[in-house]
Length: 605
Image (cartoon, rainbow, N blue to C red; front, top):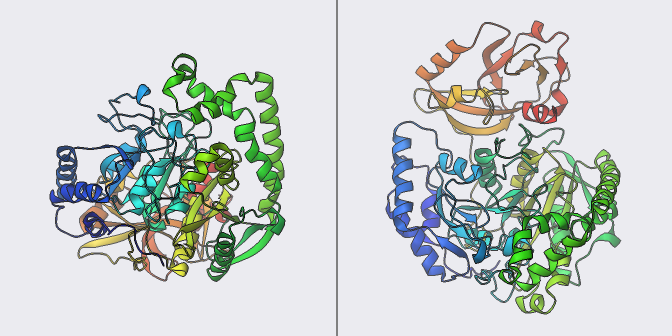
């Protein structure tokens, strides 16, 4: 186990205790700023918010909490990759010549702040989010907290370092080719590359607009799941947003699943025997949580990966930066200009040829999911020093993308996880991969994987916290399980939040329920029935309401087949919840095998 490169910041301990009954002191602003100053790395952040603005955020969330608002991220601090807009702060994308100050924050940022999180500043990145190394910025290279001689990973370098060093609770990055996963591996973090379009990319400086994702860096899968729940969901300003897809378990059972492992000859560690050992141990750790390894063919995935920079998608990067490339090329770093400049010479015919080839490879890779529920891959085969990357900037960057570049092209979701440490103390990571919409299942598997490996958090030296026990209802509170339109982000969720309900947890029912699509309901609603043969575990959220609020909520339920009964959860706890009268599902479409309402809604186009 490594020795932390720097002592954990005082703010780290403060935010872990954020759920206490007392309001957050404005002293937290000083603790956050002192932690950043003590880390003494001016390249981690491009812009840190002034104390007055952080204090204003603290005062606002304290007032909102006192007024009864449910703030699931209350008091958590976060950094924002500086290609994502924060109102009133400059967005540079690590290119000072193109900086601007937005009037509105990106929807993902707005939602996090609405949920009670505190924005601290804008983090450094590889220029225009082009790179997996973290050294392509005129603002300097963020220091890898485990060994400053090694790259921090890119392009979301500053975001990852800020979390690993304990300067913030979590951070937003972006991920087009691996930028939300490679820095996680090099900083001993969880890195969530959610289903493409699940988190809106409005307010994000585009790299490849059709492929870009907002990513999440966190210390634990539970933290990443909370952040995802707060910022996921469509936004009218994002034409690439999905409508309701993701977060669900679908047909992937996190307690019993098959995971794909590449053929031995397809694994590439670039001479790093220790990383090969970490990957082998990760396979055994995944076995321990219910996984069964199966061999799959990685070749078509690698062929798809080559399309990202060798095919027409590099033209998307050119399009995003065309004004700079054509009119102010000197504003770009040489390596960035070289890579993106390749996209200027491709034709429409090249674009269609690339799309045809990608579709062919997609059809081939789809056969993988007949035998495997998910994949387990090394996040990277190795890690390089900054000196090595300076000598071979493009070739070594490409090696870091060996296991990452195909994912968005093939519409997959991914979860990077810490896998352990080399003898030198440098961390390595692995990534769980699944088809779009299975984000929740990967997070559930990742949570159990982290419990099994028991690694410390980032570079802070703090141990993994014990898994939270199911929260009992407080005095004068009722726990309610919701399964459909009342879920977070769904059309009727406001009926809970407007009454001061708080989200207790997302989980599943006991394996005793069947789920149906009720006809002629607006908004669309499911019906859950207990006791019939063929029952399964169904995704639900458990909310807590005061007795008075629960009574008012129940009174609002219209006459019909839905009623409030007793629902048994996967751990045996019983709560109140939505059930359906059996006669109402006669002839209705059954969706039990999908595992939940979100998976069904995501599949309706």
